[in-house]
Image (cartoon, rainbow, N blue to C red; front, side):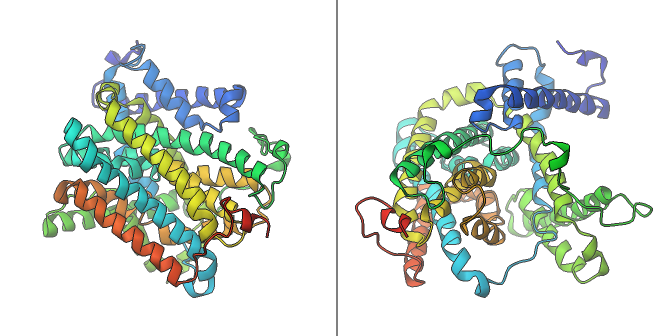
Length: 464
């Protein structure tokens, strides 16, 4: 048992101690990730391993970590997600849609259609099957998109939203959904890649034995090191990390004001993290007109986001309430299996029709993002296109400013539980399904949709 009785409860020292234990778990998990082959082969991130370790050591496992500690960890995601989202639009140059429309158009539509499919169908299943059989809450349909496309960060951030809507079970269920989605993206994604290589769907990777999980170093040699962040302001004035931290703080403060105004004016309990992202956009608009625009380094912002996200994932997973997951086992299993089948079908049916060239590469990066967030998508893409010879990676990056702020953890995601609570699962599901159909029609009108002329999905385009 940890000596928590020696630390004053609720003090800053307590929080520091709890974070120190999280750091120890992350360090041990990093060693395991490097040394244990199965973790390396499956690309399991160290933060996920650390979170599972915390869960095993906690009250529902060995009982070594006290309840007070895991409860404190469980409160961190709702705050850390704000730090992750606040700088998302700071330092960002929005590409001209007219110049890159043909490149990002199919990617953007594929992403939105897949995302709305993960919203519409689960809500409809909730209304027609889960509610009649198990009398579940209408909001349970939201955990699929929140967990799969949104990932652990979004799922952890939505814990407080579910609490405000008087459905605390949504937090652990969302985190469980994110964990299932992550394994789905990695394991099923690799199976799909092996299948695609054998069938000749891939444009770059043609022989399955060329695939390797050792495409990059675990511990990067000194000779291969590259700067992850740049010093953009004289240290005599302020440390660069501190300067960027101040920008994030301003974005959060603006987001807090927006949150309060919306709550007072519309009587809607909006979460803070999407408002902080809008705050970041306001910061970017203002600072871009000043000399301080040159002092913004996106790499530094990413480093701060990454730090917050790693500890967010650990705290979120370690604090999962296992009894809640067990109680919802049947409805959760139905949602996860149906979404898995739906997402795989979507990949093979829409992929070759939406992307004329290199359809597999374009679709696989989106498959990873739809199941286990963008990092998984890029990992899968680098497996089939190590040198980024296709335009899939470029298109995926360019579409991000038009997708990430809204879906897969953005404004739309944050509104899902609120919409379900207000309008019900069926109406919410039908609305998003209708929008999805409209986007399919739009894809055809814009010329981004073509019928496959082969019985094998994508075979006609793979050979081009």
